[in-house]
Image (cartoon, rainbow, N blue to C red; front, side, top):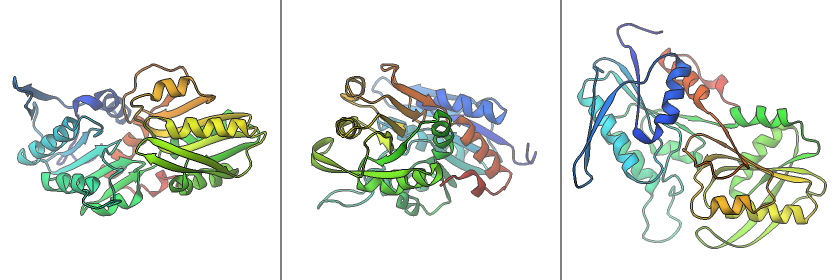
Length: 313
């Protein structure tokens, strides 16, 4: 595919290799080879084991904790630049630090902007990512950003469920825009949860705005971290007469008590993507792969085709 002068090569960071292998296979080629060497103190260095000179280099790595994943991505970009790659594209299914998109209190950093600066300084030419926590993060970059939406994956799945009396729910006011887009495509109503936090990952109280009685509710969110918000919302909705509650969340962070909360909640199903590797600790979790979406966009970018038709919202 494409020009012989500027071939395409796909590489992966270690923690995203489970997904990168599927993306490369969907595109029709094997992952490129890299070598990582660790020193006894934990420091590491990384090198390509094949030539990337003149190539379109796609580097796949989600930047979930630890921060070493972000450092590995930066090293891979720098190594490709120093090896005379033609174009370097960072494919970041989960863009870590995205919740730090503004100064919401005095004397704090804007972590998402700093990460964007680091990626740009390392020599990246383009960034691909999925369901950013805040759309405005695209503006933190001075290089093109392809912001993909997992709705292309989740909307068909929800349609195939064939649920009667489906209603889409936003877990908080900030998620109302995303949830409204799903409601529009699925032709359903919309309800919104209003929450007040005591502290990070700690909910004070929550109320549901809208009618969920006798409805099959689908809560839409970009990520599930400790699962406190979605499980609390599910409990309230079931108390108000909902038939069932499902959760759609692109990024399954699932930290701390998340698995226990999900398993002990009235949630029927939690539908997530494979942007982050998860542990098989709950039968309620359904994983849908984003490999085909990324493979298709990689091909479109490489062949200079429009990607606007690939977006659902």
